[in-house]
Image 1 (cartoon, rainbow, N blue to C red):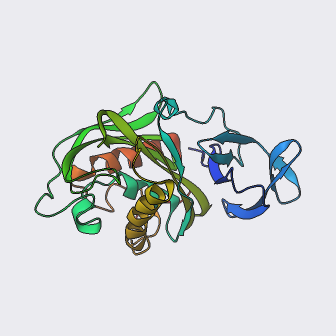
Image 2: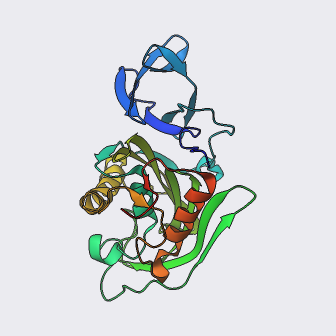
Length: 278
Protein backbone atom coordinates (compact mmCIF):
# COMPACT_ATOMS: atom_id res chain seq x y z
CA UNK A 1 0.00 0.00 0.00
CA UNK A 2 1.37 3.43 -0.93
CA UNK A 3 1.94 6.03 1.79
CA UNK A 4 -0.85 8.61 1.87
CA UNK A 5 0.74 10.77 4.56
CA UNK A 6 1.37 13.90 2.48
CA UNK A 7 -2.10 13.87 0.91
CA UNK A 8 -3.75 15.51 3.91
CA UNK A 9 -4.14 19.04 5.29
CA UNK A 10 -1.87 20.19 8.12
CA UNK A 11 -1.86 23.23 10.44
CA UNK A 12 1.21 25.41 10.02
CA UNK A 13 0.40 28.61 11.91
CA UNK A 14 -2.13 30.86 13.58
CA UNK A 15 -3.83 33.24 11.18
CA UNK A 16 -3.32 36.04 13.69
CA UNK A 17 0.47 35.52 13.69
CA UNK A 18 1.34 35.05 10.03
CA UNK A 19 1.39 38.75 9.26
CA UNK A 20 5.00 38.31 10.39
CA UNK A 21 6.82 35.88 8.04
CA UNK A 22 7.32 32.43 9.53
CA UNK A 23 9.72 29.62 8.64
CA UNK A 24 8.85 26.11 9.70
CA UNK A 25 9.06 22.44 8.74
CA UNK A 26 6.52 20.04 7.30
CA UNK A 27 7.56 16.44 6.66
CA UNK A 28 11.24 17.38 7.05
CA UNK A 29 10.90 20.08 4.39
CA UNK A 30 11.37 23.79 4.98
CA UNK A 31 8.36 25.94 4.17
CA UNK A 32 7.73 29.67 4.47
CA UNK A 33 4.54 31.45 5.50
CA UNK A 34 3.87 35.05 4.54
CA UNK A 35 0.98 37.42 3.94
CA UNK A 36 0.66 39.78 0.99
CA UNK A 37 -2.06 41.62 -0.95
CA UNK A 38 -3.49 38.33 -2.20
CA UNK A 39 -3.72 36.76 1.25
CA UNK A 40 -1.73 34.07 3.02
CA UNK A 41 1.03 32.40 1.02
CA UNK A 42 2.86 29.15 1.77
CA UNK A 43 5.88 28.08 -0.26
CA UNK A 44 8.32 25.21 -0.10
CA UNK A 45 11.97 25.32 -1.14
CA UNK A 46 12.43 26.55 -4.67
CA UNK A 47 9.57 29.02 -4.30
CA UNK A 48 6.87 26.50 -5.18
CA UNK A 49 3.50 27.65 -3.84
CA UNK A 50 1.39 25.24 -1.80
CA UNK A 51 -2.41 25.14 -1.44
CA UNK A 52 -3.91 26.78 1.64
CA UNK A 53 -7.10 26.66 3.70
CA UNK A 54 -8.03 29.10 6.48
CA UNK A 55 -10.08 27.41 9.18
CA UNK A 56 -10.35 27.16 12.98
CA UNK A 57 -8.09 30.20 13.38
CA UNK A 58 -5.21 28.39 11.65
CA UNK A 59 -3.60 28.26 8.24
CA UNK A 60 -3.48 24.77 6.71
CA UNK A 61 -1.46 23.45 3.80
CA UNK A 62 -0.41 20.22 2.12
CA UNK A 63 2.70 18.90 0.38
CA UNK A 64 0.66 16.29 -1.45
CA UNK A 65 -2.56 16.18 -3.43
CA UNK A 66 -5.52 16.01 -1.03
CA UNK A 67 -8.65 14.67 -2.71
CA UNK A 68 -10.84 16.09 0.05
CA UNK A 69 -11.61 19.33 1.83
CA UNK A 70 -10.44 19.93 5.38
CA UNK A 71 -12.97 18.57 7.87
CA UNK A 72 -15.49 20.86 9.55
CA UNK A 73 -16.75 21.17 13.13
CA UNK A 74 -20.32 22.48 12.73
CA UNK A 75 -20.88 22.82 16.49
CA UNK A 76 -18.08 25.38 16.71
CA UNK A 77 -20.16 27.82 14.66
CA UNK A 78 -23.01 28.01 17.17
CA UNK A 79 -23.54 31.48 18.70
CA UNK A 80 -22.11 32.28 22.11
CA UNK A 81 -18.96 30.19 21.93
CA UNK A 82 -15.53 31.62 22.61
CA UNK A 83 -13.06 30.53 19.92
CA UNK A 84 -9.74 30.13 21.68
CA UNK A 85 -6.36 30.09 19.92
CA UNK A 86 -4.15 28.35 22.47
CA UNK A 87 -0.86 28.75 20.58
CA UNK A 88 1.58 25.93 19.94
CA UNK A 89 4.08 23.67 21.66
CA UNK A 90 6.89 21.73 20.01
CA UNK A 91 7.20 18.17 21.27
CA UNK A 92 9.90 15.57 20.69
CA UNK A 93 7.63 12.71 19.68
CA UNK A 94 5.87 11.32 16.66
CA UNK A 95 2.88 13.41 15.55
CA UNK A 96 0.84 10.21 15.84
CA UNK A 97 1.96 9.71 19.45
CA UNK A 98 0.64 13.20 20.24
CA UNK A 99 -2.79 12.35 18.83
CA UNK A 100 -2.94 8.99 20.59
CA UNK A 101 -2.09 10.59 23.93
CA UNK A 102 -4.97 13.03 23.42
CA UNK A 103 -7.28 10.04 22.95
CA UNK A 104 -6.09 8.31 26.13
CA UNK A 105 -8.49 8.46 29.06
CA UNK A 106 -6.79 6.21 31.58
CA UNK A 107 -3.93 8.61 32.34
CA UNK A 108 -6.17 11.41 33.68
CA UNK A 109 -5.96 10.55 37.41
CA UNK A 110 -2.20 10.03 37.30
CA UNK A 111 -0.99 12.87 35.05
CA UNK A 112 -3.73 15.48 35.48
CA UNK A 113 -4.28 14.76 39.17
CA UNK A 114 -7.09 16.74 40.84
CA UNK A 115 -7.96 18.41 37.54
CA UNK A 116 -9.10 15.88 34.92
CA UNK A 117 -8.98 12.91 37.28
CA UNK A 118 -8.19 11.74 40.79
CA UNK A 119 -7.70 8.55 42.72
CA UNK A 120 -9.58 6.38 43.57
CA UNK A 121 -11.64 7.20 40.43
CA UNK A 122 -9.29 5.39 38.05
CA UNK A 123 -11.47 2.82 36.32
CA UNK A 124 -12.54 3.49 32.73
CA UNK A 125 -16.03 2.15 32.09
CA UNK A 126 -16.79 0.38 28.83
CA UNK A 127 -17.55 2.75 25.98
CA UNK A 128 -18.25 2.52 22.24
CA UNK A 129 -15.61 2.84 19.51
CA UNK A 130 -16.20 2.66 15.78
CA UNK A 131 -14.75 3.62 12.43
CA UNK A 132 -17.59 5.45 10.71
CA UNK A 133 -17.41 4.24 7.16
CA UNK A 134 -19.45 7.05 5.59
CA UNK A 135 -17.02 9.74 6.72
CA UNK A 136 -13.96 7.52 7.31
CA UNK A 137 -13.38 8.80 10.86
CA UNK A 138 -12.67 7.18 14.21
CA UNK A 139 -15.28 7.92 16.90
CA UNK A 140 -15.46 7.01 20.59
CA UNK A 141 -18.75 7.72 22.35
CA UNK A 142 -20.41 7.15 25.72
CA UNK A 143 -17.13 7.86 27.52
CA UNK A 144 -17.72 8.91 31.13
CA UNK A 145 -15.18 9.86 33.77
CA UNK A 146 -15.16 11.66 37.12
CA UNK A 147 -13.22 14.92 36.93
CA UNK A 148 -12.43 17.25 39.86
CA UNK A 149 -12.21 20.24 37.49
CA UNK A 150 -13.41 19.37 34.01
CA UNK A 151 -12.83 22.89 32.67
CA UNK A 152 -11.80 26.35 33.81
CA UNK A 153 -15.52 27.12 34.16
CA UNK A 154 -16.22 24.08 36.39
CA UNK A 155 -17.12 24.47 40.05
CA UNK A 156 -16.39 21.19 41.81
CA UNK A 157 -16.15 17.63 40.55
CA UNK A 158 -18.60 16.20 38.01
CA UNK A 159 -19.08 13.07 35.94
CA UNK A 160 -17.96 14.29 32.53
CA UNK A 161 -19.17 12.71 29.31
CA UNK A 162 -16.78 12.64 26.37
CA UNK A 163 -16.92 11.96 22.66
CA UNK A 164 -13.69 11.62 20.70
CA UNK A 165 -13.45 12.11 16.96
CA UNK A 166 -10.43 11.57 14.70
CA UNK A 167 -11.30 13.26 11.39
CA UNK A 168 -7.72 13.30 10.04
CA UNK A 169 -4.54 11.37 10.88
CA UNK A 170 -2.95 14.15 12.94
CA UNK A 171 -6.08 15.84 14.26
CA UNK A 172 -8.48 14.95 17.05
CA UNK A 173 -11.64 16.61 18.32
CA UNK A 174 -12.98 16.18 21.85
CA UNK A 175 -16.59 16.93 22.72
CA UNK A 176 -17.09 17.06 26.48
CA UNK A 177 -19.73 18.10 28.98
CA UNK A 178 -19.88 21.88 29.29
CA UNK A 179 -20.08 22.68 33.04
CA UNK A 180 -22.11 25.93 32.69
CA UNK A 181 -24.40 24.35 30.05
CA UNK A 182 -24.74 20.60 30.74
CA UNK A 183 -26.86 20.06 27.61
CA UNK A 184 -24.13 21.48 25.38
CA UNK A 185 -20.67 20.25 24.41
CA UNK A 186 -17.42 22.09 24.92
CA UNK A 187 -15.07 21.46 22.00
CA UNK A 188 -11.34 20.97 22.46
CA UNK A 189 -9.15 20.06 19.53
CA UNK A 190 -5.60 18.95 18.90
CA UNK A 191 -4.15 19.87 15.52
CA UNK A 192 -0.67 18.42 14.99
CA UNK A 193 1.92 19.61 12.47
CA UNK A 194 4.45 16.88 11.58
CA UNK A 195 7.86 18.58 11.59
CA UNK A 196 9.73 15.29 11.28
CA UNK A 197 8.80 11.72 12.12
CA UNK A 198 9.95 12.29 15.70
CA UNK A 199 9.21 16.01 16.19
CA UNK A 200 5.89 17.77 15.98
CA UNK A 201 4.27 21.10 16.71
CA UNK A 202 0.94 20.85 18.51
CA UNK A 203 -1.75 23.50 17.98
CA UNK A 204 -4.66 23.15 20.46
CA UNK A 205 -7.82 25.09 19.65
CA UNK A 206 -11.09 25.35 21.57
CA UNK A 207 -14.70 26.44 21.12
CA UNK A 208 -16.13 26.93 24.61
CA UNK A 209 -19.14 28.28 26.43
CA UNK A 210 -17.54 30.22 29.28
CA UNK A 211 -18.71 33.71 30.18
CA UNK A 212 -16.77 33.92 33.45
CA UNK A 213 -13.17 33.18 32.48
CA UNK A 214 -10.97 35.58 30.56
CA UNK A 215 -9.37 34.49 27.31
CA UNK A 216 -5.99 34.40 29.07
CA UNK A 217 -7.39 32.12 31.79
CA UNK A 218 -8.86 29.70 29.25
CA UNK A 219 -5.57 29.58 27.35
CA UNK A 220 -3.57 29.12 30.55
CA UNK A 221 -5.76 26.23 31.73
CA UNK A 222 -5.35 24.32 28.46
CA UNK A 223 -1.62 25.02 28.31
CA UNK A 224 -1.25 23.60 31.83
CA UNK A 225 -2.98 20.39 30.75
CA UNK A 226 -0.80 19.96 27.69
CA UNK A 227 2.45 20.73 29.47
CA UNK A 228 1.61 17.94 31.91
CA UNK A 229 1.29 15.63 28.90
CA UNK A 230 4.49 16.80 27.26
CA UNK A 231 6.89 15.08 29.64
CA UNK A 232 5.04 11.79 29.15
CA UNK A 233 5.11 12.11 25.37
CA UNK A 234 8.82 12.86 25.23
CA UNK A 235 9.68 9.82 27.34
CA UNK A 236 7.71 7.22 25.41
CA UNK A 237 9.72 4.46 23.76
CA UNK A 238 9.74 4.15 20.82
CA UNK A 239 9.17 7.77 19.82
CA UNK A 240 7.25 6.59 16.76
CA UNK A 241 3.79 5.06 17.16
CA UNK A 242 3.86 1.25 16.81
CA UNK A 243 1.25 -0.06 14.38
CA UNK A 244 2.23 -3.71 14.79
CA UNK A 245 -0.44 -5.11 17.17
CA UNK A 246 2.15 -7.29 18.89
CA UNK A 247 4.39 -4.43 20.00
CA UNK A 248 2.26 -3.07 22.86
CA UNK A 249 -0.44 -4.77 24.94
CA UNK A 250 -3.72 -2.78 25.03
CA UNK A 251 -6.32 -2.81 27.80
CA UNK A 252 -10.05 -2.09 27.70
CA UNK A 253 -9.30 1.61 28.24
CA UNK A 254 -7.19 1.59 25.06
CA UNK A 255 -10.03 0.76 22.66
CA UNK A 256 -9.81 4.16 20.94
CA UNK A 257 -6.06 3.82 20.51
CA UNK A 258 -6.46 0.37 18.97
CA UNK A 259 -9.07 1.67 16.51
CA UNK A 260 -6.86 4.67 15.65
CA UNK A 261 -3.86 2.44 14.87
CA UNK A 262 -5.95 0.08 12.75
CA UNK A 263 -7.41 3.03 10.88
CA UNK A 264 -3.95 4.46 10.15
CA UNK A 265 -2.91 1.14 8.65
CA UNK A 266 -6.12 0.94 6.64
CA UNK A 267 -5.64 4.37 5.03
CA UNK A 268 -1.94 3.75 4.39
CA UNK A 269 -0.55 6.36 6.77
CA UNK A 270 3.00 5.61 7.90
CA UNK A 271 4.79 8.91 8.61
CA UNK A 272 5.70 8.87 12.30
CA UNK A 273 4.71 5.22 12.65
CA UNK A 274 6.78 2.15 13.45
CA UNK A 275 5.32 -0.49 11.20
CA UNK A 276 7.07 -3.60 12.54
CA UNK A 277 8.77 -4.54 15.79
CA UNK A 278 12.38 -3.41 15.99
